[in-house]
Amino acid sequence: MRLVLDTNVVVSALLWHGTPNTLLKTVSAKDTAFFTSSPLLAELADVLSRSKLQAQIAAVQLSVLELIGIYSASAIKVNPLSLPRTAPDPDDDVVIGTALAAEAEFIVTGDRTLLSVAQYQSVKIITVAEALQMLEQSRSK
Image (cartoon, rainbow, N blue to C red; front, top):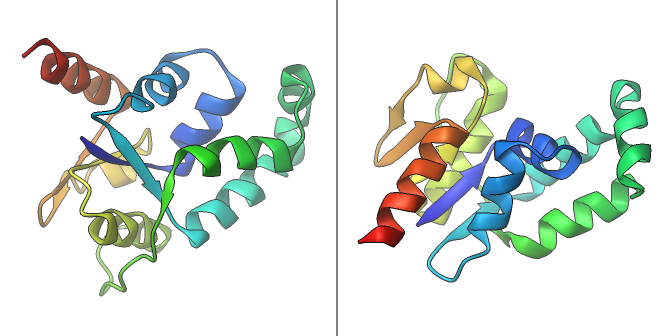
């Protein structure tokens, strides 16, 4: 399974122990790969540098650079495709462009605006819970 994790999912996975963290650990299985791009890594750096997350970053005892390194070491980096305006939020177009470049099956997000797109070409846009369920189903076959 080929996945692109939206930045909100990556932040949650790196800083907390909920379902996004479970997904990040599950994705490291050999039948699953996830992808990122330079713009998504830049967005991750920006979000992790925000003051509202500093207490949680201190709690995990890692720096922003270490967190980005952990994530980028686990993801395959691609160059996103340029798209015409596609998503309701123009910032989401790079997520879709990354997924298309990676030939991903799914974008995993918690962003309701991006979820409202539902699908772009062959890429389905799903929640973390849906991604975990699909991974479980694919492995039980």
